[in-house]
Length: 257
Image (cartoon, rainbow, N blue to C red; front, side, top):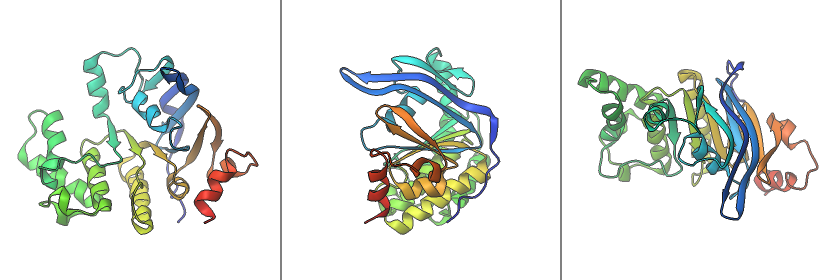
């Protein structure tokens, strides 16, 4: 599947990271990271488990504090932002967690209504219903509206998790291992959905993964995290056109079975 072309504004970075460092006691995870995400772009961050991919988006979202460096998101300095402004900024970002993060005690409808009721004070029932149906249509799961999360497949839960982030019309999407634990056919469907979200909602996205098929199918640009820094960036072909012994085995494991 070829990646659909997206209108990317390379003069308008929505996330700018400079010199980012993050350690946990003596374990230095991020060792001076520089990165930009541009308006309308799907940026894939690749790396082995434990290389700091998820730490990166936690710092971007303000869930972790950087030890050093600057992180600007939609013009806001994450290191110098009030709790109120950070909450407002997070509403402009959508998080697709690895486990989908659905409330097991709520139906699909209630799971989707929850962020609207919480963040859009005074919103009416008619508008809520319209938004719920809109995002369910966007992820192709209108028929699940009254089901419980336990009644859904893994792929359906991923889709509903994405729908719940879309309901607030985020400007930035953060996907954490979107294809983890899914069968190959469902992985392809999730990859296609990520591209459809980019096209329909005009989002800018960071996609954290170690799945090279996901990277190739969704990424306008690939950034490979090695030894705590981004050592290679570019198209999929550019990143893997190398004899670097840290990169080649990664490619071989994914595509040569």
